[in-house]
Image 1 (cartoon, rainbow, N blue to C red):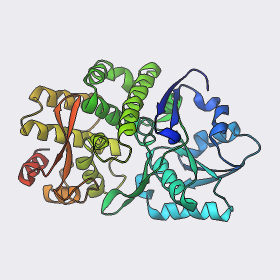
Image 2: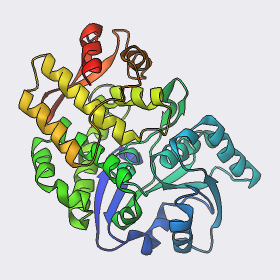
Image 3: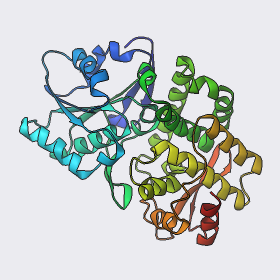
Image 4: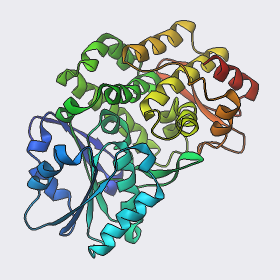
Length: 361
């Protein structure tokens, strides 16, 4: 894998590299060193399969027995039923504890593959090959795995780290525009919560990112991965600091669940959630009006929505937020902003204030 950048997620004996570069799937020989045993199950979906499955299979050594499992594309298939199908593929092919699962796809495939790997025979190896921008900058990094429940997003899952992550920026050329924008929401979030300088760089380079300029995309992916890796190193299990990565997500998850999984892309919902969280931060006397406007403007330039779906009532919206997995005994837990680049965890927000923000959004 030449012409690549490398970010390491430092977690002691569970540390792993993230490789970032253009055209990495055409030279994947090094992937073989991260495979345990001789059995491989590649999990992908029916959209990614015709594009990249054969390329990945061709990179694997002949000594491996390679099987594949295809899942239908879409958030609505991120369920326990799909996980059971993965278990069946593993058991029917007599896969042992040395099997390696390879996630080839976006965040849905990565989350489900990781969860299957965490739970099959109490834990087997897996590798992430993310094919969407959102997965490359966020969901493939940090070991969060799981599936959705009809009453809440990602309510069933486990923390489980991959052996390595391979992010090929060339695959983003086949990504639909709305999927690219959805990934940019997580990039913007990175700057908003912990790096004001990176946020300013995004403001100056958003047109290059939207037009898929390879150098701009590579930098955005690298910085996002570096920032997330630093946070995961300090708080792998989300006891405190890592919660800041959920900026915009409590509002966003309510949109995803309330509208039906797959109706809104994750990044689209997060974009609206970030704008609502920024507005709430302003109402608490923290974030300036100018910074609220900067966040909203950057999301709009990235091709993202900034207003909530009006057919989801404020009462329903709030009910979904009350089921969020980050909540505590004190009530709804939100990530808010003191300023661009400085996020805080806030427990027990006044419900009437939050309802006012939802109604305005």
